[in-house]
Image (cartoon, rainbow, N blue to C red):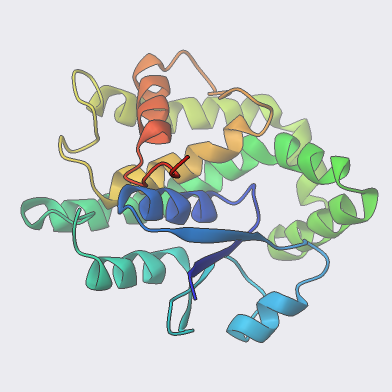
Length: 222
């Protein structure tokens, strides 16, 4: 039984896990879960959230951080937690997936809504319903109306990361967990086909392209 990643394509946390799997050179199958029909996900993991990764022995692990740590335990090379930088990677990941996620999620919202709209109005409606329940009634409409405000906040939040990547390939010099977290958070900004950053961030654009190309997976034999 191969590794199986249960995901929603727009999810930044699923993008993070997928890229870690590729970086570690692991063969895996991607299961795109229907946003409305989650029965298989429930049967596999006992819950309705993604990402979920099932291992060769059938063990399911939910939550991108828990999955990343479990992968590091089972497949330590190449590492995502270089010993001399592990603490910094963990701390920076908490920021990227906490405060930064709250801002970029709002910037990406129109693209995510359009993604689900193309897959049927009922999926878009359900996505809106869940976001409104989580953040308060009218969240989606307010976020769209306050588009310029959230773009400005995102630019401010991303500026230190743009600066950190000056003359460096990765955030802390050596690739690690924080880079995969940041890649995941930027991923929804590419749902329209090209990466739509909220400003002229050349270092972040180059970083995303670099991360996007990283893979240790073997090419299939002709």
